[in-house]
Length: 262
Image 1 (cartoon, rainbow, N blue to C red):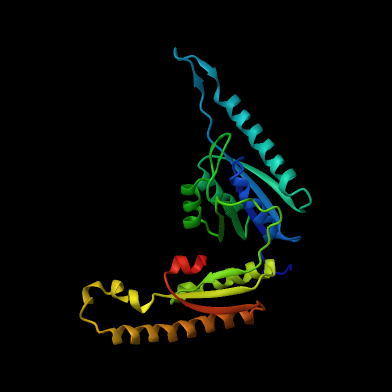
Image 2: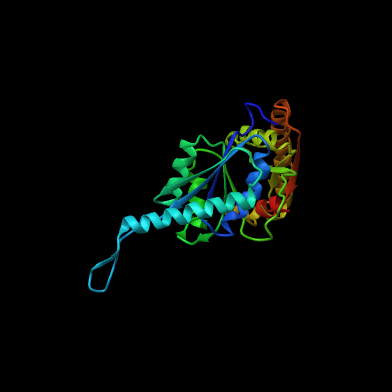
């Protein structure tokens, strides 16, 4: 699907490692046959190498040129391995702090989505590490998709369903346009999910009141939260459906992280 509301360009940071390349099948799945993909590799700033006596045995310019050649080779290999038939693929090389360069590239390229691995270490130094991914998620001006380091790399990744957690706030609903664009780009249906802490755990939310609130009060609070959650989910589903996205909503009781991953 290609329209103004779909994602038109993806930025994929790489570092030459197999772990870093885990993002590529998913970038390809999101891009489909219409969105362009930009592969980015960030080189460290080269420093001159000196002997014990202080003589320069490797100047910074030569070392930097070597870094660039390695980066070019790694990017070309990644295209040949993962994107041989993909249209509109380009490569970029930057120098400096990885997270800063990724964020700058996302702006410069007008990317609609950054797709990156959560961990990795290539031949020319750390690139896509957990700390880098965390900084990009927190500071990037565009949505970021993080691919975890575990499991086999799928040869033919497919986005079959999008799970979008929704909290009880207007800020949470602000993410719906991003969910809509991703759904329209991939054609995948959306499940909106809201998780309520079970009534048996509510005492942990109000620790100062533990032992003074009767069980019936927790039951009433749980019922109130359930009604509000259903109203919120129905509202969010309606927003996506009005945008032409196939969507449904679910309200779970449990711990948020485990419920989302389940």
